Image (tube, rainbow, N blue to C red; front, side, top):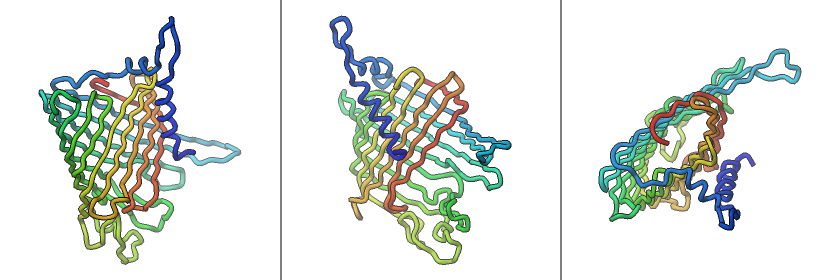
Amino acid sequence: MKKISPLIISAFFTSYTYAQKVQGGKVNTESAKLANKLDTTKKQEGWSIRGTNTLLLNQAAFSNWVAGGINSIALTARADYEFNLKRGKNLWENRILGGYGLRSEEGNPATKVEDILDITSKYGYQLGKSNWYSAAALNIKTQFAKGYDYSKPAQSYISNAFSPGYVTLGFGVDYIPNDNFQLSIHPLTSRFTIIADKAVFDADGDGILTDAYGAKPTENLVYQLGAYVGGRYKVKLMENIFLDNRFGIFTNYLEKPQNMVLSYSAILDMKVNKFISTQITADLFYDDNQIGKLQLKETLGVGLTYKFGRY
């Protein structure tokens, strides 16, 4: 149940918005109410700059607690910036998403709970007067620091900065009716997997090199050519509660196209006041070149939030 809870939440609110009721002899849809809360206007001319800075804290403390427990504290910092430019039929969108967090338990070394760097730059040219754009998109995704399998304390690190790193360059069309919804269909997409640190091929530290992230020990770069479909949907569920969904699907034309790379991420932001909010994040990821299993990460925290620009 924990693994599908983010999807259940999204499905619940989606179905809820289509509920109808009669008021004053007229049918009033809840979806219409929700639409009034969203920014459904067309893309505005000029620069649109906005950003969110978040510092989340999770803490547990025990003193003479009969049931037992371990004192712990977790601190996560996130930054999410967007720089978008609309000039006539030209649309240039840029997003920088970064996050890093550590958890410390009494008597144990600190462990990493968040580590991501995700940069996207996309150019589109409007087709006629429609909401469709011919598009070219570049995405760079990696992490900042070394990563470990904490279930194997004797093992060396299994990841590092740009080990792996993913660079994706795609061409196709985008459907962008407003700032809250985007759909990308890129049938010509190149995906590069970078292994900059050879130590990840020897995670056991025994001198025996093994394949990692779809790369052989002799390779620093793996190339894939395929198709990408992705999208983003932002919705204001109710006053001071926002949900930001993103998904992506990539299939490799050159080898095993049935083994698709799947990703989904959701951020549920529940604003307490201008500077304090509660956030729940969920990330689902599947890549046959990694562990061949569905990966899940969930976080919940209360902390400080500073936003600027229009949301």
